[in-house]
Length: 257
Length: 314
Image 1 (cartoon, one colour):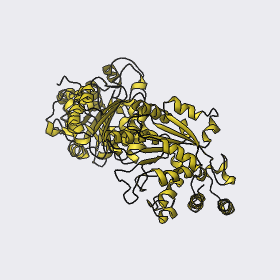
Image 2 (tube, one colour):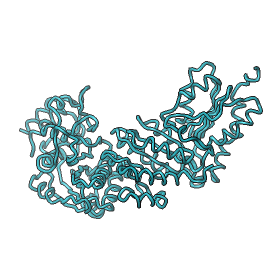
Image 3 (tube, rainbow over the protein chains, first blue to last red):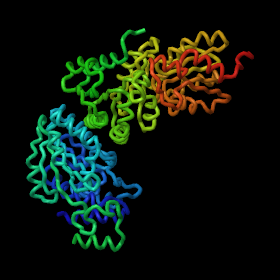
Image 4 (cartoon, rainbow over the protein chains, first blue to last red):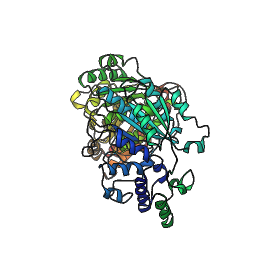
């Protein structure tokens, strides 16, 4: 578990007085493994033609992406310190026209996957081998456009795309019949269910994706815990968009020590 | 008048441009599938009949634009513009990606299909998004030329294809994106017409002349960016302007003409448009126009009702 990254996220929320901390904590381990071991990129040239594409479709989880973009050299510590400040480039949803390394401006749910399909189709037309990863939320899977895109990707056999679903239980708060793996399989995706906080299981699933230009698209359903790492904020309570006060912040940082 | 439909011209232009430009990709929602087969055959891998999922088509088109392609997304107007509006807003405009939306079923062309298949708010909707271009080619040559002028630029561009044409022939060099066309010279009345309604303006011209009105008729095929120069120059001379358009009054061309000309001393303004109601009746396109006063007689009535007769004093 990435305690230091979580601490940095908590500090950004505390100082910036805004942000979705639990949503970031459920995905930060996934994004860290992707950037450390799987994605090809050049932080000095974020638009490098040979890069792989990572699209954070659940834009409100962007704090996890920001700390990793800083860790791997796309943005600076000063950028991090200016989160949600006038003149800064980092807001509560990622803006691809401002932040190096961000591929799509997301926030309204259900946009990232169909947008990524266009990228994947474009790569296939250009006969390029770049890979496309999209991280969507399980709550986001309530959006119809996710399933429009799931249907289209299967029909176009866009095998160069891999969806990772952050299955943190948000969806089941509203729709308890939470059969996500069956749904993705029914839409024709090669579907794997893993523990999204286990590095070994992430490697097993991500390492198995074959990324064929024509082939079955891959879905990795990652079981996660919203707020993972800090018992006080874990689960689906008030902490979704809550800003810690001084004492709560001290407790959060202590939990992560 | 050309016998070819503008929709057929769309298919012909896709073929011609697609053969020259390997980056043109056409995505449709099961509309115009058969007439686009020549493009599909000539440009393998660049034609997709995606399915009945317009928001996904728009988002995918934006993804293709990110990869350096020039997408043309095409289906019936309300599904492409109204249903997929947030995709247009966020995936194209907010991310500063250019692309092309080609709609058929303009206004109430699908006259008997009810409001589900009508779309007369598209100017207003797209004007609300920064950086968009809005064209309304009401003859085949206009579509061909405007598409070629706009499809590769960095804006999102709407091409609103009507089922009816205005019947005027223009020289190709007179058709320029963002430029109006002066059809007649006049002295005491400006008529600004867009779309097929230019036909009614032309029919009204002589009848207006019989009652002392010397009308300057301006034709507008580009709603945005609007050629306010040609409009203001004319209205500064005539002092009166009537706008005729197949769009809701709210957010239509009339609003922009009024804003552009408001500082001209003594200006008189009138507009013929669709009132802010649903068009729920049945019949033909012509029947709907008749009901709404979008006719030659409607122009004569509006001119006589709304404009002072100062010209008779001369």
